[in-house]
Length: 285
Image 1 (cartoon, rainbow, N blue to C red):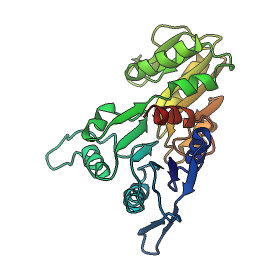
Image 2 (image 1 turned 180 degrees about the horizontal axis):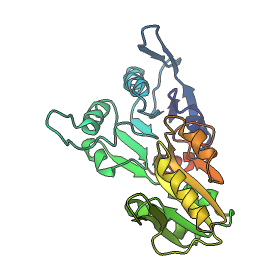
Image 3 (image 1 turned 135 degrees about the horizontal axis):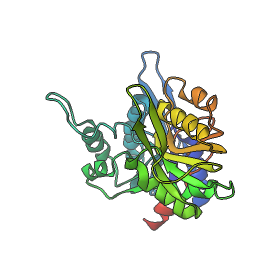
Image 4 (image 1 turned 180 degrees about the vertical axis):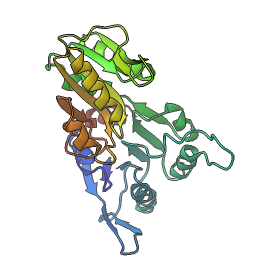
């Protein structure tokens, strides 16, 4: 087996290759002055099963993935597995207005043309993967998040809302601590109370878990509300740290004691590795 690392996922791909004890090849990728992507794999051939590790976000990385698929096929790859740590366009999974595309489906169809298997991590809607004709699996980062915080003396795990309550339950049960979800209660026309739906947060060390953080506004407001309600500390951990518009700076400068994410997207707080769970999935075939 050969692991090919795209430009968006070099460190993760290297770590996976080390765990699996297989060859690692880094694709050379650059951008021409007009913005077009150029990529090359500096090997004579790839006469083996090949795993490409590359995000499909933002758009430049999606194009690079398409090109890498063609390159490895031309070089003799026997079976091509795509590891897509963060699947771009997964949130555009429905058509709301006439004239809109079903963007997630479109991306799956195009990626499907050059692969035999797909592995994602905490994709926004797992049903999106059903648009692939090949075998596919979405891995859950709850295991590695729980393991990372197991010695942090967390007293309560929370999700930002009831829709993500299952993630808090998964992490909380793995850590052996209670879990709950945050609930907004409108007190007046301008005042909103944010608090755990059932649990008391007074004197507790709290961990908020989510699949992704984009702007961070909800998390920042929740951290302040929990601290005001008596929480000793509030940390947040997500799978995908998208962090748009200086969100990371605002999060680290807020009432949060710790801001962490998985290494599906590279940034300064992506310290929780998903390499092990991906390697396990690849071994299982």
